[in-house]
Length: 299
Image (cartoon, rainbow, N blue to C red; front, top):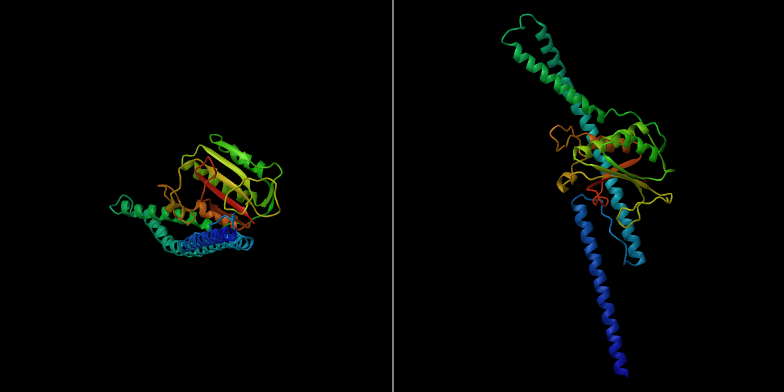
């Protein structure tokens, strides 16, 4: 009998040691995942807290929140850096181009140049400088945004007005009728129009808008109850999937994969939202039934 109890005790201890070892291995894997994410400048990781002890769970939740905070700070710093760079570049380029355009225009008005062998070359210089000035002027939007005028915006009514502008798209709007956010409606409209145009250019036929609340496990959950915490809006479309290498660059000003794109739509949208205390990001996992999901968040 004593021997039987001894064997049982040894078995229990062995199982306990095995489970403890397995648990430590899982924690080591978590640490490696977060280390790799930070090394690749991906701060959007949110690892699940299921199966953790209460202390480990609290630590994982803190790390998840820290990753999101770092991501927002990095995005904010990037926007500020690109603003300063764009301001300097546009100023210097305009200073260089303006006299070229003025001088070439004056020469074209000169009767000695008109119909001469030089006219075609001077006109090419004038047209090129004019086009370049218009090109640079479009990027001044990144540094000359108006200050937001905050007011209450009913998100459902707002979304319906956006949808009415694009009747050829199939819209799925899942937003509570009483959900109100504080934002500049005109600037917010520009963001939603930019996202819609991007979807159309990606050959999307269907767009979804829904309110979300984070549940802390890394997944995206539609929720309409509200708990006084942060809220989010999912903007999803069924257009072309954004490749991983492209996804890391889409918010960089002037970056575009479109032959006629300007590369300022998403970076401008992110800047507009940051001015109002919101963020814009690309969800790592799109909403079910869609290929691309952008997340607008307010904390």
